[in-house]
Length: 145
Image (cartoon, rainbow, N blue to C red; front, side):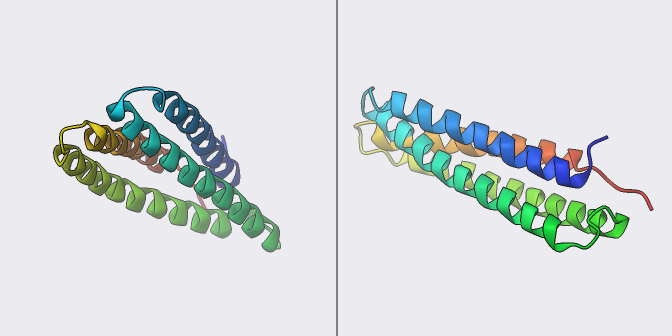
């Protein structure tokens, strides 16, 4: 079974993979009409932010791992698991807000399709992250005392 340190590393790796996909897909979308360009800029923006979160999360986790005298102690792993699970559930809640905001933005289009594309870009990114956060929150490894 994977421990919390390995799990956190895996979550950061998966988020980085999504980030890379998002940025590449976003640049491809920039080749399209205003709808696709609006969506593409959202994919690029979200991809960059998610890459920064993945890098920061991985670096912070490694720092905490090195800082603890014995990171394999059950109470330390339990605390890490609790904190990560809480963070993932908070993010899932925020993802719902992003979906709502994206839908509103899409509906505020001025007729050229760019806001619709940007809004749907937000919705797609936020829905992915909602599923990502919920599945990972439900999968956080629990340490038994």
